[in-house]
Length: 528
Image (cartoon, rainbow, N blue to C red):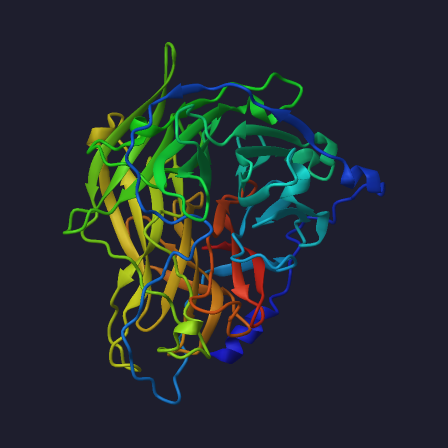
């Protein structure tokens, strides 16, 4: 109900037994630049062929699709809510600079939250107060004049370090870079201890030149891995060429050490076992005591019930690293989701539809203690019954559990499930498990038939089950109409296991704050 959403909107911020952290009073401490470094070489595997594909970039609206018309009664009842337990939550970064979509991301560490949106980052104390003010990515880079975008944040619990990866790009002169910023949790408020390293976005020295887009960021206990989609210049008409995988030793966290040499796979090396070029290979974030080799996962849509998941593993060898691959874990037919509707917008009002996502996996999480690899994306679904409209195709969340084998070819798709309800649209899901193995999925949701504005949600799925319990984290406040046509939303959410109390999971999401502004919301939830 609208009333219950408003009540949740004033969720009290809890301090979970942690006092306010002291912040140095010296302004210079906060404004200090991180140590900067630029990498000059890489070990590269793969070559580029002439083939290219029409795939979306971060600068496009991904869901330029239509919805069938539907009748809508004058009054519509609201949906009910089932809930895990919220522990804390607060409004974090706002729509200060006017960029959209928000590209919201972040992670919870031992003593801080680090959050990011499309062009800047901010460090928060555990009580939701600011520890390090909002800082533009361009300021943290060595090339402030180019466009900086698509940040991804993780907390590497094996080293107690926040890691932020983001991209830089320019068409004239042509430039593409991948930035890695390491923030030690113990000294997160001391920016002089931060370490930034810049890598070339185009690591394969062949023609034509390409630029890196839509990064993913994963890690195990010894390395971080960044993947990107590579497009030709200029960005306005670029064609997708191949996926790039770059794995880097964790000495990249320490600017007093030499810059590590990354190992890069691209071009022909990132074709899957069926020789299809993969698009958006998700590097898994790891949880558990012994994650082993870095795992990655991608989705391939080939139509006619032939869609599948492909698995990848980066294995150390006597001479470096090798990229192992396996396919195909059939998913059944998966179709592109329709645009979502939102409260106050009307089912047939295309100017108020929102981009719920596409078939790219939004993140991946590996539960090493249970050998379970998870991923999710937005898909077309047709839940029933459509009692309010008589016919309403939904954008739903589909998630997967893969049990990887030591020989990847023996891996199995152990579970898959769908989160959604009739006449309600979901989008931009990310996944993680807590210490007991419960799967948490955070996502956005809205509905014209149920008069729900763009809101932040989380669902939990117990081990061995496909049944979910959904919970409204933060209700939207208004119908969102930032621009004409389908509203840009997403392109990310984020989620991670609490490193101090593994029963808990932190979510980083967004909701519609006003007709033209989004608002990031950070929540911590548990299933206990």
